[in-house]
Amino acid sequence: MNRSPILKALSSMRQSGARTLLMGGQACIFYGAAEFSRDVDLLILADAANLERIRRALSDLEAEPIAVPALDQAALERGHAIHFRCRRADVGGLRIDLMSRYRGGPGFEELWERRTTIETDGETVDLLALEDLVRAKKTQRDKDWPMLTRLLEQNYFERGELAGPREIEFWLRELRTPGLLVEAAAKYPEAAARIGAQRQAVAAAIRGEEAEIAAALETEEAGERSLDRAYWGPLKAELERLRLARARR
Image (tube, rainbow, N blue to C red):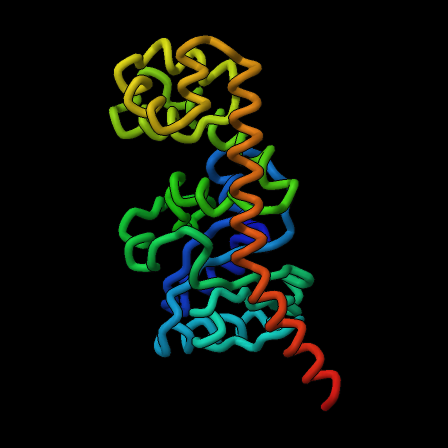
């Protein structure tokens, strides 16, 4: 079996015993929202024992650091991403980005407990649960918002009549397609009335006002982008100090 470099990298992580959760573009692909990505984004448990397992896996992949900071528990716990490039022939060029937290997300153990686990090409892959992946995708990056919309649409169409109360509330809280919000509000009026008291886009969907929904969604997105810039601002400043310090050595 000729497995992809992505699965080979994930296999090295699993064989090391490290606890990791796939996030980012590759996780979106597994959830059915196609996105081209040559990177592997992993959320990891940042304790000493798990970091040692991660280091073994990175060594197996012949992965080299490509930026500051170094793989360090304190840096991970502050919210930094740690970046590597694989050099082993069968995964050559693959980039691996490691994080132990993301803005607005709970701790790793909680995320691990509600993870999604799938089997593909003989490999077991642990992913962020869809709700957590949606939360992690609310960034300042332009490319994340269309992907977020596609993720939610895919889940809505895929689950259809199989949805339970939790999924219905999830859709009404998170859907970003005006037409689908109108449809969901009409289909689930009690849940829509409850959530519409908190989410302007749903309140507009109850009235069938798609232009108003679109405006409310733009306001939501702008707010999340602003929060993300505020979150990353101090971390980016710290990275710049680390780069300058390394350049002086």
